[in-house]
Amino acid sequence: MAFFLSTFTNKVDKKGRVSVPASFRSAVSSSHFPGIVVYRPFNLPCIEGADMTFLEQLSDRLYGDFGPFNPDQMSVATAILAGASQLSFDPEGRVMLPGELREFAGVDSHATFVGLGRKFQIWGADAYAAHRQDQLAHAAEAAPKLPPFGGGGQA
Amino acid sequence: MAFFLSTFTNKVDKKGRVSVPASFRSAVSSSHFPGIVVYRPFNLPCIEGADMTFLEQLSDRLYGDFGPFNPDQMSVATAILAGASQLSFDPEGRVMLPGELREFAGVDSHATFVGLGRKFQIWGADAYAAHRQDQLAHAAEAAPKLPPFGGGGQA
DNA sequence: TATAAAAAACCATGGTATCCCAAATTAGTT
DNA sequence: AACTAATTTGGGATACCATGGTTTTTTATA
Image (cartoon, rainbow over all chains, first blue to last red; front, side, top):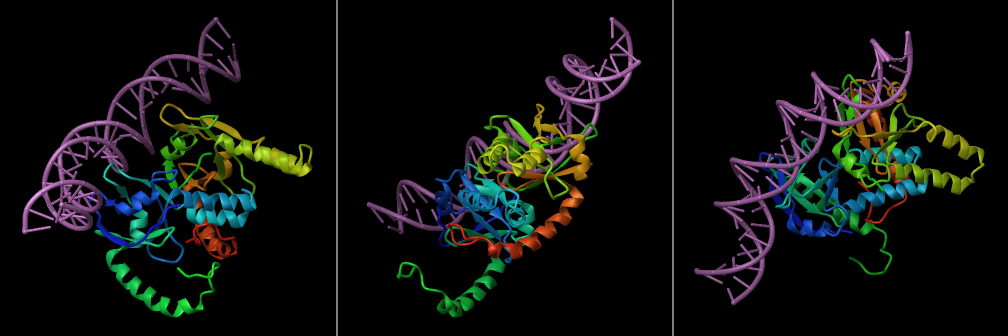
């Protein structure tokens, strides 16, 4: 499955197109759907994205464990899948971000792509600066509280 | 098998025709039956749909899990399979929703297609807004109870 | 068989997204 | 520093999609 690293800020043109960072594009290129999938996260004012495999796994896992008619499963499916969009690349590697998500995340002239491993986030350039400060401060005190990783080593 | 994402609201014209979102159409195009199958769900005032493969798989699973003469199996089969309709597309990609289901779901001037992975729902535009609020609230408390899946957590 | 009603095919249109080509910027090399 | 390659950005032309209406075919009814 795709893996996303690093941070990139690209322009949003007046048609609403944004270049997806080249390294993100090559990360999803081997996926079933050659593009990205974006959705609205529960708690943060940003756009979240991943490759299609990520969402298919989520969906199939939910259906598989509970059958297609479990209320808990359906609510999570509705929350994430219903608000998600498949975005395919144009020949230059750009996508069109859905207007609803752009508004929600406050992405207007610039979009900041933030690699977070199996998924990534897209922020309005200004909102991200503040968010990053928060996260750095929080991480310093959260890290010692994490349980040990399975293999004994650390990432 | 077909995979449905995102939410689209389309108009129902006075003849009862609705455009099925293009991405849903291409999702079912490789299926055995080149159209959608709709049925009345158990608990929700909406129409549910999927591709033919989904229903076949549901049927196989019912028979497999319960045997072909189990009362539970029969009631589920009767509820879903017996009331299901195959809808094929007109040359422009529209279908006619069965009147009975439209009434049941309160679908009149607009139909909201909600992608939920392997299946989707069709709601009256107004009823869906309320439902989505419920689902988001419910999902927030249901999500932590779900088992983790590969990739390191959900939104 | 004739007629009405319904369903299906056909055609036309506005709006939007996508493609295609080209320029500008950035990164990497020699 | 100069050159080359890759990536990002911009804009005009094109294709696609949702929608509305008209005509033809089918089905049901008298």
